[in-house]
Image (cartoon, rainbow, N blue to C red):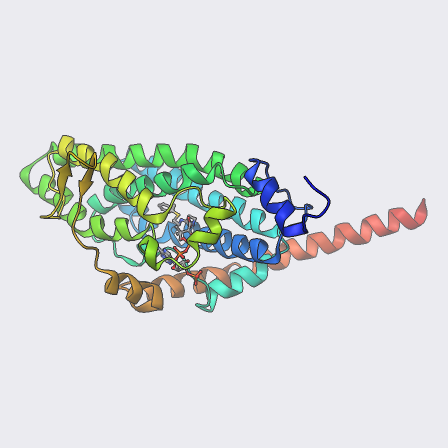
Length: 318
Ligand code: FAQ
């Protein structure tokens, strides 16, 4: 590295050399801001993502299903916590991030604004939503920011279990009565397109991708990941004996990938603007949960103050 290189060039060379950036390292302000944006949105998604499935915890069809679902939803809460912590290492304040979510200022994944009217939706979320999350997050295990990449390694292990539990629910339904198979098909019909939207806008409409890829925050583009997910998921749908709701879906021998139909981007932008089927309900549920947790925060703060006073007293006595 030559002496003439300015800080930004040295940073880029460091990242290009596949080195991890750690919290105390120098980083461009825009790198820090991009990470806080992405990691906090990701954290909010994990937390809001608990709501559609939590809807079914009390109505799971057996004790075994209930235990697995409960564990999965608790895992998502844990993912939110790892991710808020990772954002804090960049100087973000947790209460500010939570406020941004509760006031509707912050984004979270579009997928969690769709309803879960039947038990088959729980299978579809595990299979497709966690499946899409894994496709996106495996590359994030190699993201250039150390704390984020380490959080993602653990998160991906847990997401794999989530994906399998969802697929197993759908397998059971698909091999059940004609009504059960129809429930599974109906859930696939409703979750397929929103799952493809999870990867974000097409590459030519993705304002953040080019810089994020240059800094190795993202390792693959939105379109590349979406294609990987489709190629991996179609054989799984075939194995279930279900039909993916896309008449244009076709294996393209030349490309070695599936061709697929046009995504309804107008719907995507409506959902991220707050006009999806459940946006208001999700925000209200988080606001209520936050208000109900006030006494916990008060108790935790009181304990922290007491500990600090004790330490100060011990310090002055020594
Ligand atoms: N929903 O320029 P890009 C999960 C926004 S976790 C809402 O392409 P970027 C686990 C984007 O923020 C699911 N907004 O942006 C689970 C940006 O807005 P901004 C969440 C979206 O950041 C399973 C604008 O559009 N996963 O599922 C969406 O380079 C089951 C332009 O987009 C992550 O967060 C969307 N789908 O790429 C939990 C993974 N897509 O901020 C419970 C980490 C895009 O400029 C149950 N995040 N936008 O105003 C990422 O990899 C990236 O942030 C992308 C977007 C790929 C999501």
